[in-house]
Image (cartoon, rainbow, N blue to C red; front, side, top):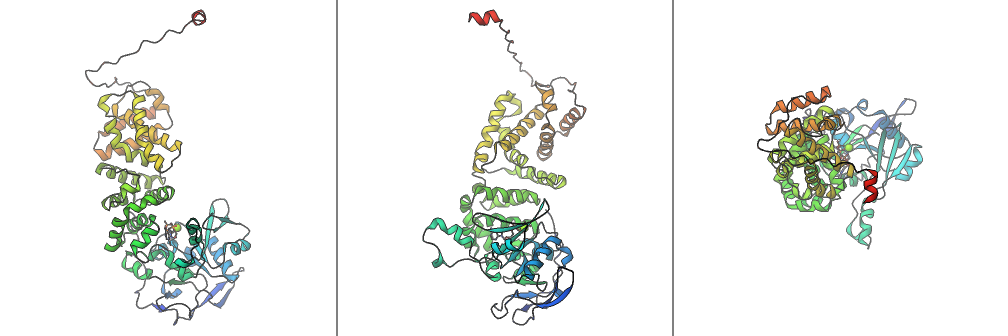
Length: 467
Ligand code: ATP
Ligand code: MG
């Protein structure tokens, strides 16, 4: 598990200002790098309630040098044009914890159309939830979202089919936007107007206490969006934060609701777990809360698989690459051995069919592409070939297959997790390196004879004509 630096937060009670008492004045750099003092438009002191906390620049550790320069450009341009512009979400949390943010997201009161007018390199995306994507070069996209709010029940359109779009697109104030978010530590804002941190939900206190707290009633928030249950386990594992009993109980109570979440979202969150090195840990906790089975379309891995997933996750952290096909093959390898035990010496075609049957329900549940299923199946078959030893038919072709080293990597991990013979992995590694067929005698199970079907004679043209 990744550990984080201790939060460099000053004691909460010394720096707790409410918006009524804090003069929100700051410095602003114009496009030419000149500084000017300004009064923040970001917080309307008279409108904000007393429980909003503002940390002025002098009371927190976030410096603009830690923020990506293109993100700063977007923040400044929005601000110069009279809009509120905040750094929002995970980046503020991570900077306060002394971690490097994965990406920087921006929140503003400018509508997506207004953002588009300000930036030539802006594209509006999302059918239901309109977002502005501002592109820099080929690879960098900065996401700018307009502050949103929860609508009141009596505002909802009559047609329930329209509720989704309606719910997603009710623009609101920064405070309303904060309360729409999932956890208090994910709802902190960094205000570019005065470089202060704005906390409407008690996230600073929770960061200090290393506590992951759902905004609002966990049961209600999980029923509203079941993916939040998985995110709760993910963030608590990633950051080493505690989850309170109320949240854990709400996950156990609402576990079945996860079946209603879009499989594509669940799949993305599952991959996210492995990207952050907490795949095994979170899935095991999900299992103990009864969340894993509904999450994975009915599949439930055994104890050995969690051990394998932990080694797999370490492997991904080393290579910096998450291999989804390998995750799938690892999830199913125990069942695969059960169906295709090596001592049964099954023909490869039969093994191939069994592996396919095992993976199909899972792939259908997550609507995975055929290519991915094929790769996972090849990895399982590769493991079968490795486990039965050297000297079998088709070995030369197998060694030359570009996918074989990947299967061997998985077999190595499996071997380690299950206490197998490491010499077997080394022999195959050597065979792969030399690119030659190993010279060892075929290893076959005792008492079994191989039956060769006599090769059919090719029929001559005359014979073919007669038949
Ligand atoms: P990281 O990017 O490091 O994984 P993050 O907190 O930025 O963490 P994202 O998935 O990028 O997570 O989401 C950005 C922000 O959007 C979150 O911090 C949170 O405030 C909000 N958010 C994301 N998913 C949800 C959700 N399901 N419900 C409510 N708010 C959400
Ligand atoms: Mg993020």
